[in-house]
Length: 200
Image (cartoon, rainbow, N blue to C red; front, side, top):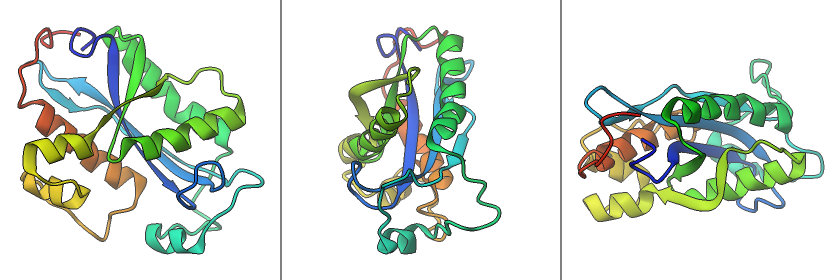
């Protein structure tokens, strides 16, 4: 893996938020899937980690965003964590996967990846987190990859073009979206030769 991406470990990330402005709107959910390798050197999904977050003080939540995501902030089973604790929770398995593959940095994979990265970076800055494993600006964007591979840029259509099923009732859950994005990334990336990918 480290030879495949110049020391970077691809980690798929999806966030659900209280709006589109990462400086003004709250981060509400985050899910990550480190990309792994099978014995044949093909990309596969690692284990998913996720967290619900308590809205950070002073940030806004647009009710229209909650309508889209279906998030109920005061749901008794939401078990939301403060931002720093939530970041610790999802960063730990990322660092473990980096160690497994000998990678020096994680690189965020996302569908419209800079949206996810901007919200992640904003939370890291607010909490003054010192152990963010992700590259601060480089990403792999599955919008670009799916546009090249299938002529599709919408996640649902790209997933279907890749031969997978899409359940609209589960969409806009961070876990569902991150796992579908991870499957899309692996499906496309496995179509390319993988020099040095036969081992970690």
